[in-house]
Length: 109
Image 1 (cartoon, rainbow, N blue to C red):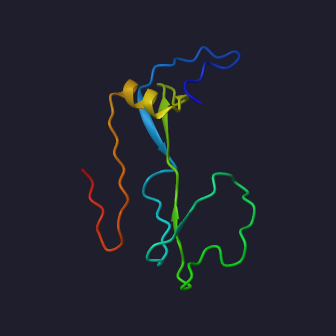
Image 2: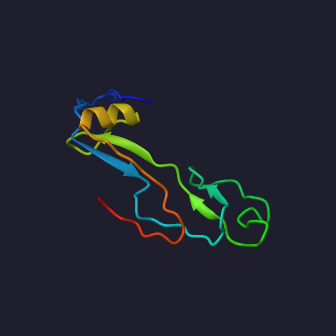
């Protein structure tokens, strides 16, 4: 989905005034596996995984990874764009996400 038009009966402004990242950054789902992870479900009621899915071959708990979504919001807080390129260009932003390696500290710039 790139840009959304105003819905029926809406006069919505499609001007992007801020960007929002979902799920919120700062939610950590830790595991103790040295190398394995799984992608978090993007639905509210996912199908169950088979027994052992959340563990690596050594029995360590896999780390949970998440796919972030970037939305452009108008002045009323309504999402008017969800294409990364559209949101970043409209907001004049440049975002770079890197994964944190075990044993390192997160540093904000």
